[in-house]
Image 1 (cartoon, helix red, strand yellow):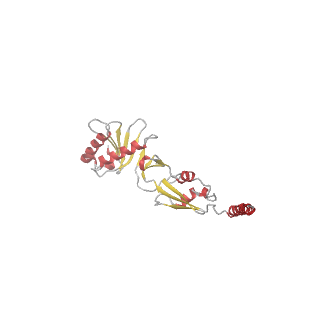
Image 2: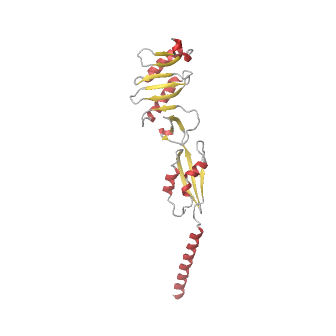
Image 3: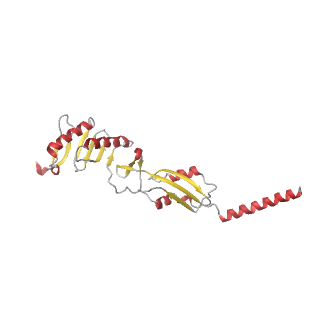
Length: 227
């Protein structure tokens, strides 16, 4: 019985000394964050900067839900998974957002209609969409419809805007600005296309803009030197 008590006391002393040694040596202090994923619009170095607060934390005490919240915090990260890599690392696998259009002046519409606000807007040929707050999905859907209607021509929509009062306007790939109004937007666009093909396609450099908000035709604003 005495031997058992002596052994128990020795074991407790050993565990206390060993625990103190571990704490002193910081065996489970996070020294690096491993970032994996196919990245196009951000970089591993930028994500490392975003995850810098993990360095120095104790891996045994770290909450994975908290790490997950941090992992998805950068603007370009669409989803992430995290895993502890013993004894001193965290692995973060990320999936990027895919940008569909520039929203307003400095934001982007990503897959699913989500608005993201990266520090730098990528220099890629994206359409520009404008509208009141919360209308990005409606504007994106309208842009897709406008693109379909224009697919029979050599024109492409470069900018689509929805005003607060509900009126639409589109700027085309040749620089032409077309007002479409609030109602029958696609029908008005088709009417413009008919006039464009028959009368306007060869005179674009002479036109300021087109108003297609009329029931049976369009109004053309010509540059002053043409009048």
